[in-house]
Amino acid sequence: MPSEPKPSQAKAPSKAPSKAPSRAPSRATRIIHNRRHQDSFGSPYSPVYNTTTYRFANTAALQDVIEGRTPGNLYTRWGSNPTIRELEQGLAGLENAEDALAFASGMAAISATLFAHGRNGIVCFGDLYGGTQELLTQHLEPLGIPVTFLLQSEFDQLADALNRPGMLVYCESPANPTLGILDIRKLALLAHAKGALLAVDNTFASPVNQQPLVLGADFSIHSATKFLGGHSDLTAGAVMASAEQIRPIALWRKNLGQILAPETAALLSRSLRTLPLRVRQHNDNAMAVAQAMVNHPAIKQVLYPGLPDFPGHDLAAQQMDGFGGVLTLEIRGGREQAAKVADNLRVFLLATSLGGVESLASQPCATSHHGISREERERRGITDGMLRLSVGLEDAQDLIADLQQALNLL
Ligand SMILES: *Cc1c(COP(=O)(O)O)cnc(C)c1O
Image (cartoon, rainbow, N blue to C red; front, top):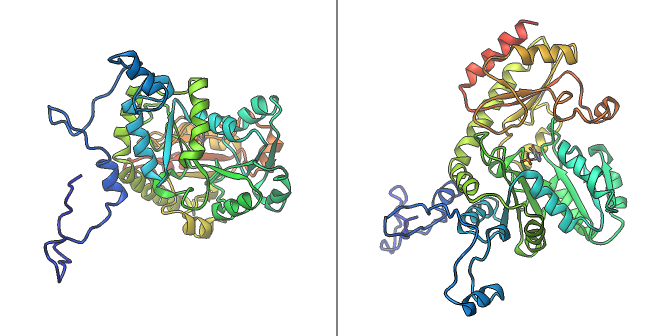
């Protein structure tokens, strides 16, 4: 970015005109200018370092790097690759984090964080992504890691569940597919009072709409496959945290081999430059779709944090800067009727995932929550008539018209 900020014409300083008031660049500006690459070609962006290894002039120079006396890159799986580090600096900047790590997938980021910081026990609060649930029950619990699951309505049991020092509280807000909103500040205070750390899966909100670390959480985790990537063409993950808390996660990433490819890192860095713009439009489109669906006779309810009568609306308005691009419709008549709507959509694609430029529709009972029993789904408020929409960047009126024609065919 320009080293001398241009004086603002609107607010010319009355004294010392030679010194323009220094203005900290805002996030959208920082994302675009997060690097100052210099090469003989004048490219503003650094090349993709598609390399696994690095050459040294002599053994002493190699030894200096291995033993940490001089900074340098050794081996890409360890995370030492300029393209990956540049992405990580961009990711850290998105959430005002001291440091960040990029991963080959969201699940890689989640598993490394849980293995590195959950060994004394994990308490999951509220609804979880299906893959995270499976990781916890199929892998971590059998390894002897104590895992407790509490519903959002069971907040009063959380303090008692944190019965050992050094535990980890793990949650998602907004949650899938009910869009339940958790009070991140309150969870952080309680976790810290009990000597625990708090990890928030921030995938649904994206860093533009929510800043878990600023709200007091210790880890913000992303499936970068979703909004951060934003084009449904890459799989990646991220963890943002303090440098101290990042260190053990980096060790897991290194030894479990969860690094992403430099090419994917470069693609993700490119996506980040349009993130604020994209997320704002996702927010606006989702709000327009939600409002247009509220009074439709075929719809029992619209779950979207931006609607004033949504149960978590006030809390979302306090802790979020936007309500996100995901909403859930509950179609009257249950599973078959919801499937009919999904099958009749023409602009929305029938596909799982979210956060891409294209709008997607999926039925949680048939996709993300397929592996959970009907009773357990109902206990969590997930009904068979739900249709989750990831609202993309098409014209909102086209999306609304598409939903209306599909609903009118019922
Ligand atoms: C998709 C998703 C994940 C898993 O991410 P992958 O990139 O598919 O590994 C984790 N959490 C949430 C909330 C997700 O939506």
